[in-house]
Amino acid sequence: MKNNRLMKNLGKATVAAALLATGVSPVLAATENKTEVKSNKTAAESPSKKTSPSESSKASSSSEASKSSSSVASSSSKKAAKKSAKKSTKKSTKKAAKKSAKKSTKKAAKKSAKKAAKKSAKKSTKKAAKKSTKKATKKVAKKATKKSTKKATKKAAKKATKKAAKKATKKSTKNTKKAAKTTKKSTKKAAKDTKKAAKTTKKSTKKAAKKASAKSTSASSTSSAK
Figure: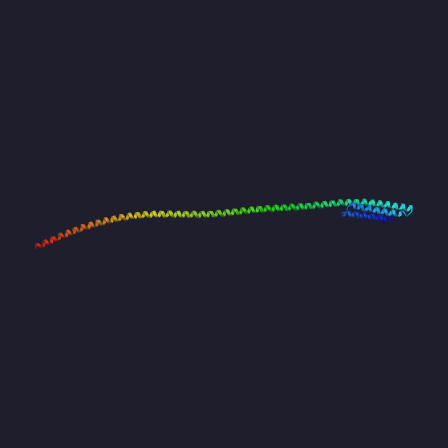
């Protein structure tokens, strides 16, 4: 009977230790042990009233042994609970630290990735804007140069044409004037020549008439003499 109680108390202590390992409060386990001890004590005192003094002393001895066993079990349970709590705390701390480190690393990686993406996007936008501006400036400059060249060429051609026309007109006027002068000179010469020719003709005609008259007079004189 004594051994059975010891075994029962030890079983209770083991259960208490197991409960503590799974997260049950040590105070609850201690309360359960005390309740069990009281229950055992009551059970031991109850038959001693009906038995003889020798049986009473045996029961008292048995109760003391049970109490001692319960105390040992309680101490063992407290020790186990303390060890289990320490182990659990260590495990929990380690787990929390690991989780925190993981979270921190994840957060840092996310932040770094976001920062890198932002920087890359900014750089890309800047590069694209620069390229676009350069292209647009080049295009505008090319267009302006083309327009300017076209305008300058047109202006130069117009100026050259105007100059050439003016020069040609001037030359033509000069030539016309020269031609008119030459014509006038030629006309004057022709008139002079005509006048001279007329004079020569008149002189020749007069001379011929005089000669003819003289010949006629000579013939008439010859005729009279006959």
